Length: 154
Image 1 (cartoon, rainbow, N blue to C red):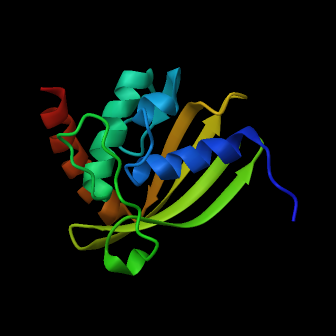
Image 2 (cartoon, one colour):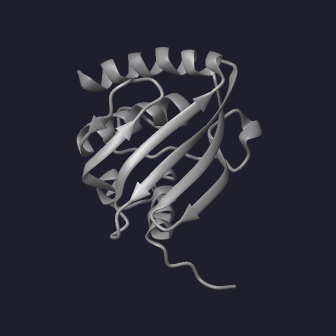
């Protein structure tokens, strides 16, 4: 089997280290300073590393097991989505792009979605897009994310 050397491979390896709470430098080691975050909850793109970190922290505490009070906490991605916690179930990696499918449970509602990640040639994330389904899960995430973003912003 041929070893993969696309920029996205190292980027996603570091992303998995981050969500396990084991990446030295945390999100600062992953996110380009001008990265853009596209949320299923907010209409406009969120531009810049700091706002992207804020949204990813809120998502980690809403969808996973992150401690929102830690400024750069990862969240444990369970290999078994049946546990009711966040877990990646599929990955597609090519060139500078990745699509990672996830499953989780929010307020007792099944949630399924994808993280679509684009990195530059140095393996830094320049765009992070999240898409989710079904509507009931999005509504639950919307309410929780709003509350978490308000808490983290204050």
